[in-house]
Image (tube, rainbow, N blue to C red; front, side, top):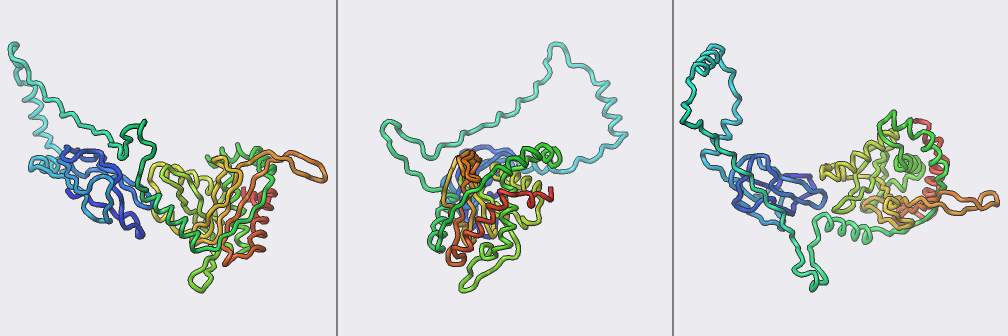
Length: 374
């Protein structure tokens, strides 16, 4: 049986074999985990489709093109016959034949006292090989640095960041939002929302709704440049930045303006779960007209998010922090969040960017209109 790199998306051309879970020449059982692959977007696992002897053609740490041969599982004639027999449907036994076998077994004489009954052979123990550490320090007392090649996903992130900085005239504008009303509404309706929909009412769904409404008012923020043209999108596919072990992943909520709050929260929770399991589809990471990144999850108070090129803007959310603010001439303490909007100045001017961010702030501070559908 041939082991080849599977197709995982139209824009993915090669994959790195990050781990072989067995050594060359090892005996493999059908269904066993063979290796882990990593592309510039996702990682995946390959399992054996047959039992036999593993022959590795492309060693761990090297890359191979999609569809190329990276290994074989050699089968003996006996193994091939056994698997063929195992996969054949078992015919229903004839009733008369079954009855005859039962009678014969009943009348079969007991083995003599001096002769031991044959002991069935023990099944061969499956050998397990530990995953080799690719870059193990030879001596931690002497080595002060370790050189590691970047993974395909990290290379992809690096290329995307450089591409964004080189192909956009990126600026960032800032504002802050009083989160008092949102916190009150979550405290008031949170339990009923969880009971009804099976998911918590989070901040992200509120910001997604605020962004889609603001994008309708400022279409340039939802557009992008193609050559000498401006391409205006009349749909709202919102990318949600999700941190993963191998780097940042941005799955896309399609037609987010048509989704209920519960659908948004359920989709985001499902994205996070499947990203952790390396089970996210390539098509779910492509496209998008606008993105949101929540650095507050990691404690960030302020940042300048990088535009997810070729999109034209990205919203950065940050940590909620109790701060003194002035209201009606009085100093009061309010839960405040810093907001940042990075945008491509070639298509969005300063007035539009500032007005767009202020509109988001207004929706967040007075979210009652957004929450009517709840």
